[in-house]
Amino acid sequence: MSKIVRLTLFKIPNAADLPDAAKSYSTLAQDAQKDGKPYIISSHGNQTYDDPRAQGYNFVARTVFESKADMDYYDNECSAHAALKNSLKSKTGGPPLVVYVDGQ
Image (cartoon, rainbow, N blue to C red; front, side, top):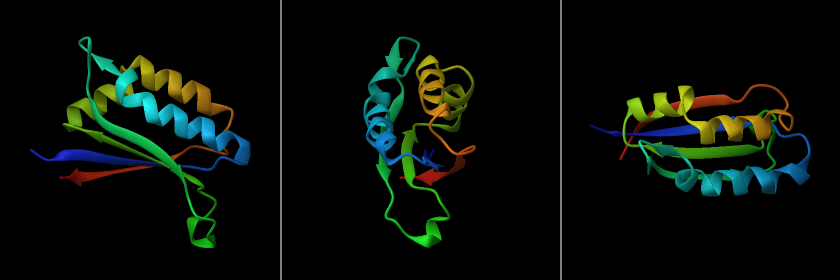
């Protein structure tokens, strides 16, 4: 079965908030636990290049899961993800754009 690669694009209006967002995603794979063990294969976030084609999205988080079931757990039950969403909620300009694909 293929791994799941998830990209989450954010519009973060205040550039001073971008380093904190990147830091949050850099520790997510260690912080997120399922059955007492880390379950996210990798996670990191980066600021995008300033380009009009980005349509205002200026931060991209890439998260890799072993399975779609793990991503569903992340979305619906993971306390680390809930804390991450809570910390970013007031810093974003609208809801994020989320896409995911089969990955290698």
